[in-house]
Length: 96
Image (cartoon, rainbow, N blue to C red; front, side, top):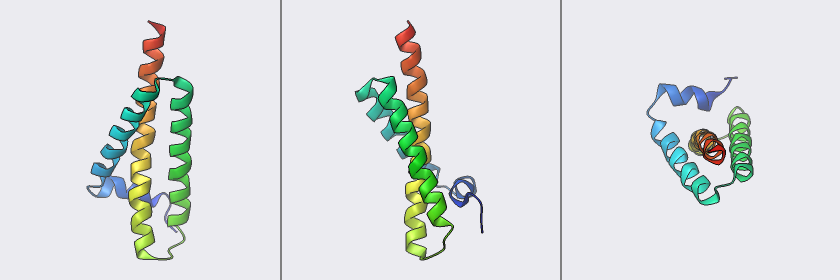
């Protein structure tokens, strides 16, 4: 049983491209929302999606399912990063 295979694959291959797609999508979504509460909900939902992908990918059922979970999990990591960056920017912008 591998621990965190999606996160491990992120550093071993060029799947950073999919993470960047998630970051850009999360930033665009959170710019439209412009609300810290909704941004945190997006961050938590991306984390839950990533955690589910990690848990299911450890089952080793089908290669195609594992490949799809790898892409979705990597995009979810990017989404978490994007929502986190947007939450910081929104918080700083609200304080000024």
